[in-house]
Length: 169
Image (cartoon, rainbow, N blue to C red):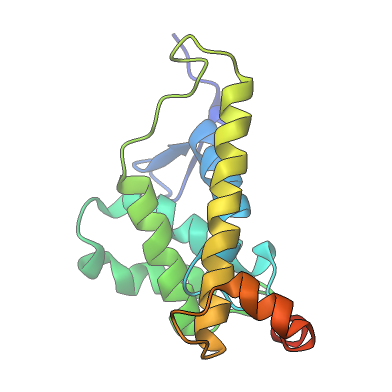
């Protein structure tokens, strides 16, 4: 059975390393939803700033295998070549590359369709992942604001709404 050349793309001239279009789209969709919830996320940056680093990370995993430390220098060089207008600093890019590498290494979860369940369950899972990411970002902001650990965020927002709004600008 012939392979459609549009179904894979290659990092190498000799076509030795390929990532399926489906996998690339899956990774891209995941990171477009999850990037704001990452510990290295910087407010004011868009997904387009992170996308080149994520691409290098998940394709680097396919290209270099299991040894991130061995591959890191080459992946950073790849990122520098393709980053375009990305506003990430080098350390931020490294963190995003590593996150995408780690995510690509994790076993893929079966979709609802693969499990014989209604497809709307996948949408619910994606929504829940987005909520978790937003919650992590909120907690990070609360910690950065220096709030005491025993003061719930809700009480803080109720008592000091103007300060809360200023923190999220």
